[in-house]
Amino acid sequence: MIRFRGATSVVMLAVGMMTSAAAGFSQTIQVNRENRTIAITATDKVTAIADQATLHIGFIAYGPDSSTAYANGSRASNAIVKALTGAGIPKEAIQSENQQVTPVQNYQLDKLTEAQKAQRQFQVQQSWTVKLGAEDAARTLDLAVKAGANNSGQIEWGFKDEKTPEGQAAAKALKSARAQAEQMATSLNAKLGVLLYASNEVQPSGPRPMVMRMSVANAPMDKVEPLAINPREIEKTATVYAVFAIE
Image 1 (cartoon, one colour):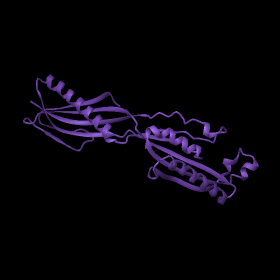
Image 2: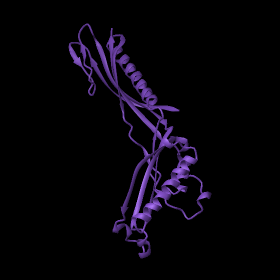
Image 3: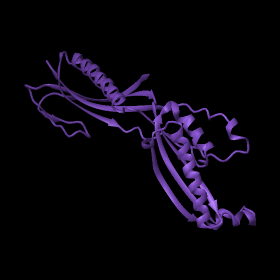
Image 4: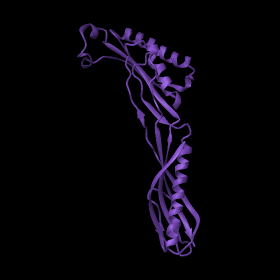
């Protein structure tokens, strides 16, 4: 369900021999005595619960040498992807993000015992993104972690159809612009005429990730419930520049 929220606006009046334009919009409106207008810039927004999630999953595997680390990483990598595809997640929804085999830096080993240091000379890191419905984020993260994805959890929330909330925000902003124009026309003892021009600019909402890092638990993983994850509420903002004739 999409909810509408309060709005702020900037109002501009253009009457007489002048040129009127809204900052940030390329259209220039010529105004003269035969073309009396009111120009309004209005901003409004809507909020809605995300229906799509982009889940980041990955792992880190170690070894005493690069070959062993790679072999450990290969087992983890294939086990994770097999768990996801086996649960019905399409392969095209699982996209590779990063993979690398590197030596472990000395500062990363400072707090380890000598035996542990010997087993962590090299590391393999790999990560993917999984695009799915928001309602499936918790279950998919649970599957990946239990399959060995020990470096996972960031979620970027969005919409399957981004244009719908953007259009609703723009429509609400235009409605607000018309209401303000009517008030101004009344104060001028004039009647608001037709809409001559309108331009819309949707403000990017930006990513709203949820970040966590998973580690292997000591408890039997098959008895661990998925995390309680709820989709985020996302805000879409639109700014409308509208020019109305006045009679």
